[in-house]
Image (cartoon, rainbow, N blue to C red; front, side, top):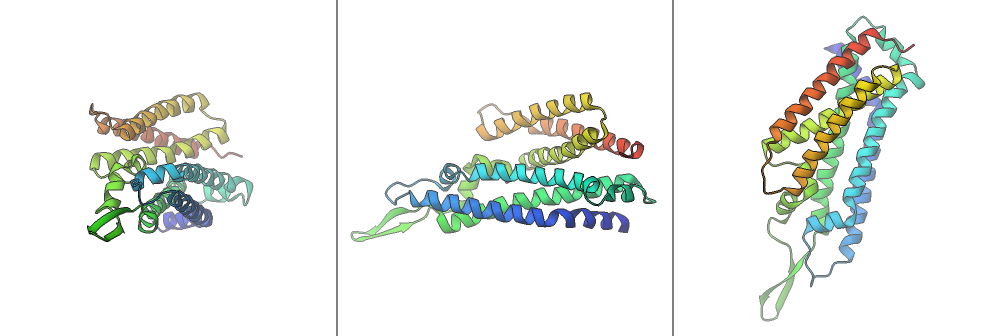
Length: 259
């Protein structure tokens, strides 16, 4: 366990500064976009916060940040080869190579969770600072600007974006977790196959299947059609795909040296 913790700290310390910069960039830029959208709203035309959030372009920044996090993972993977050659030292240590695999995956997972937390933070801060108001008449000559009661909670419930980021049911949470964890393992497995010139045909088939499942799940969860779809089935498929990534990645690491 001590060796695993050391490996995790080694991996996370490398990406920590990049994750911190990415989260700070995302929060700051989304805050600016929300502020700019808020300036164009007057008290006579009330717009719910979730509509203002999407209309501001904050979701686009979130998607760019997600792409940035994937870029950090790729940088983390190739840094072992291109910078310090530490991959060769780590693979020569008297320990199971799967510890190196799971340590890197855990570091990436913490990075993605940090990005998710930054999105929740900008939602809370954005509403607290820039939430739209409407005019409320308290008396014949007493008109004040006020906000909707439970507006933040209602915004999170109604928002297509936050239904994915912060699901309110166990089924939704499991679906989001399955999507996230499958993406992380897919990144590592893809890089491993590309670097080792190994099983590229199998990689393409599995990734395409995963993308089809993820896209269909996200489309369903965003649109919320009247017909119910069991998310446990899609989550199970993604967990099976993730299991394949884990199994084959460890097998590749135990066989290959990439030298």
